[in-house]
Image (cartoon, rainbow, N blue to C red; front, side):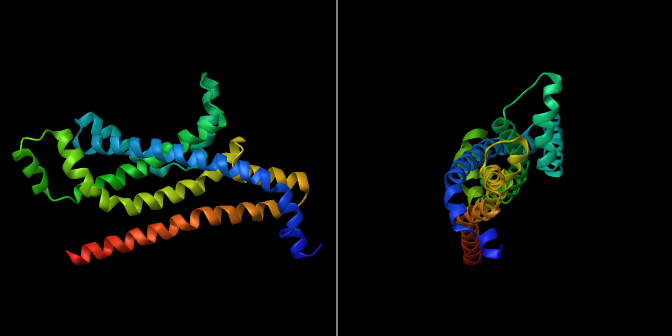
Length: 225
């Protein structure tokens, strides 16, 4: 067999396409769930670290350090395979969502902390002078300004999380990579893996370009100041 018929077999790709489409649907759902949960959790952890009482700050720092250092694959295996031994059992989708969300929230917390700390202290003082309480100050004054700073790195982290969804195949979740490997085994040809790589590229490349655009726009805004 030559290179084309082995890795770029059109007939095999067409027959495996429905399986790949089911896989990309699961991958997108996993990525969306992880980014929403991880983003919300990261903001909460960030506020705990910056403004919480000392025990909450210590917990937040430990949480961030732990989940930034722990590989997602190790965390996923612990959640899916180890927790059942203590009576806690999750589906493959829930396990993958938890693992990705925990890691994404740790990185999000650090990005948000950098964004909030970049806001001049005078903004807080002006809000206090107007009689705004903490939560209104954060929602109306601080977070809208910090959002311009944190969007580029957050978008970059989202791209990374979507790539890491491929690890969910380790716990037999039918994501794009798992469907591609199943199709490869079924058809005795690696072309479905090439098809999966092309789908990942088509899906993630616009997000990568979006990150570059946001970073460039942020750089121009900083220069304009």
